Amino acid sequence: MLAIVTGGTAGIGRHIAAALAAHGATVIVTGRDPDRGAEAAADINGRFIAVDHTSVSANAELASRLRDEANPVDILVNNVGALPLGQPAVTDEGHEVSLAVNYLGPVTLTDGLLPLLAPGAHVVNVVSSAYAIYRGDPFTAPEPYVGIVAHGRAKQLHLLATLSLARRLGDGALVNAVNPGMAWTPGTQALTRESVPQWRLIWPIVRFFQRRASAQRAATAPVAWALRPPSTGRYVESDGKPRPLPDRLTDPALQDRAWRYPVEPR
Ligand SMILES: NC(=O)c1ccc[n+]([C@@H]2O[C@H](COP(=O)([O-])OP(=O)(O)OC[C@H]3O[C@@H](n4cnc5c(N)ncnc54)[C@H](OP(=O)(O)O)[C@@H]3O)[C@@H](O)[C@H]2O)c1
Image (tube, rainbow, N blue to C red; front, side, top):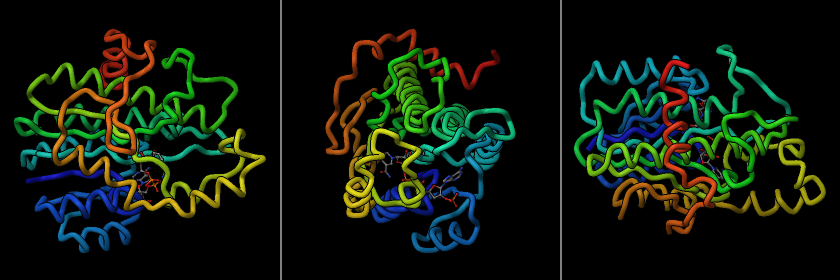
């Protein structure tokens, strides 16, 4: 059983990778830092591939490299996803960072890996309940920039793309989006008051609870849906149970556009 866990060298992803390895999977983990990657891979007798997932072309290159190796993929966990920044940032390719790492990159990688997915493969896209924050047109960048809103929009687009892919693959694969819930991880530790203005006044309380939120526990629902997904095309909350989406996100045409947007020429 071959599994890929993006951002699997720290935080929630590291626990997902460890749990999949404990269930007998050979796990490929990705990340940017080679030392952390080597250590994480050694821990689970897996393999590390260095990649910056904010780069759309790097995601496409990773998929191409794995296609060349031609090993069928049983489990793909698109876990990587930066939490919001206080200030807007743009990648070298000209994309807003949150959109790039939470949506454009993962969809590009998944699209490139489709030929490798084993029959009945499981795909888990790690999203966030922050998807619900953004109520505008998901294909229009929110103005002015607010970190948590940009993050929510990117997660919403990834969630929509997940549902489109699940329909497209039918019985061929089980594809779901899972919110792991709050966890104290490198990403959470890097948050600032400016990232989430709504929390500015209660910041010490937010930090109190974040520090106590276990990344291992947050890995539970993504792991369950990676190993034994009971259905496909679901949005799953951190308790492991599927939830309905607001009506505005159930339109198949909107979902299909979210899938096509990063992978088709515009
Ligand atoms: N933590 C929470 O409270 C929370 C809540 C809801 C949803 N989520 C979602 O859960 C997922 C995991 O969250 P997390 O907090 O564990 O994340 P994190 O702490 O930011 O992620 C750490 C892992 O991701 C890798 N990584 C980060 N940016 C990368 C990049 N640009 N390219 C390649 N690898 C990168 C890190 O390795 P390198 O640093 O070496 O690159 C490391 O392996 C994300 O999708 C997040 O949005 C988290």
